[in-house]
Image (cartoon, rainbow, N blue to C red; front, side):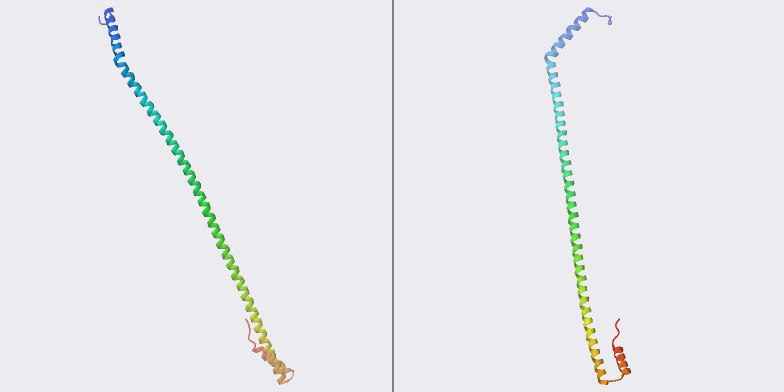
Length: 163
């Protein structure tokens, strides 16, 4: 009974279905479609916004990478300039030290040469004085050969020894 199809029941079911379908189509269907269209638009807008945000984030990231690369290049350049400046200062200091050392050496050589000349001049004066004294003593004494030798030996022994 309940499982057997009756023509009347089938007919009333079809009519009811068509009437409900027409009522839904007239009143509910436009609101459902509008609601679905609105939801589709919101999702589309959200996807567009997310895409724009992603593109903006990529742009900012690219700018940051460029700035970082520029900062690294600038840091390398500053470091290279500092190294060059340090090397120049080092070379200047070494050059000045060499110049000062050479001046000191030259001054010492000049001083040594001057002292040497003064010592030789002093030695010549003393030798001349000794020779004059020896000659005077020989003339005054007018002694024989043995006396002359002993006189010269005596004068030589008076000469101070040098180291």
